[in-house]
Image (cartoon, helix red, strand yellow):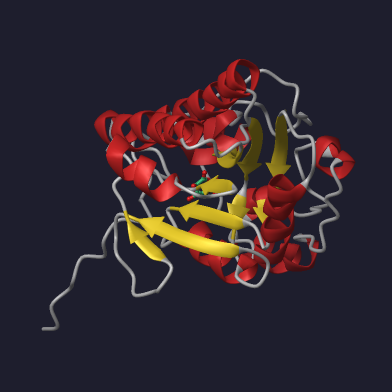
Amino acid sequence: MKKVLITGATGDVGTHLSRELAQKYKLRLSDKRPIKAANFMKADITKMADCVRITKGMDAIVHLGGYSVEGPWESILQANIIGCYNVFEAARRNRVKRIVFPTSNHATGFYRRDQTIDHRVYPKPDSRYGVSKVFGEALGSLYADKYGMEMYMVRIGNVNPAPLDKRRLSIWISPRDIAQLVSIGIDHPGIKFEIVYGVSGNKRSWYDNSNAARLGYRPQDDSEPYAQEIMAKEKPSDNAIAEVHQGGIFCTAEDVPNPAAPKRKTRKK
Ligand code: 15L
């Protein structure tokens, strides 16, 4: 069984992947927020020493740790630029060749919704967060070319048991489909540097995901069965820029609520 590190393992996507991949690999889970699990190692990815410690002895890394939405530059800089550099560099030092890097649809969020884009388009980030994901893709490319590492970039749409709204009907990916796509990234022989889109086989997709198909991805899900109900609930929006572009509100917002932020306790009256 391959030994696989998942950083950011307590986050949304990390929780789905830890569950879905638990039988297939010997997982090491890591995050800055501790959880009770025998295979867990607490780490702060902004510290190189922590990254060297958690990547030691691994066959592959799924690097999910980071700031997962648009937000303050300082938070993004620490978690997604410095943190990403530390994890890739620690992997190189520990001779871990294979990295699966979940980048994001927000690396290309300023493409219009009436366009179909593939893995070869140049990035059009829609936010500081999107820029940080482009940084990760570029760093992956450098480490593949310069150090012979094997880099698999998944531009994830939105991982959820069911799509949430109109925009997510186009970018939704189910937990079992993201697990399949990430497994390809861990196991496919001969990967040098690849970009794929992390979406299910959605009829309304904005992506030509033929690169993922070439590598063997056969999505099992499609958002279409949810479409009627979601479209009936969708409220009209006066944000024309968000409506026209694939990244939605990331194209205009300075802050998007962070699902990973600690929940504030509300006192009962
Ligand atoms: C992302 O990249 C985020 O990590 C996730 O929380 C969602 O906001 C998703 O994009 C999205 O576009 O829905």
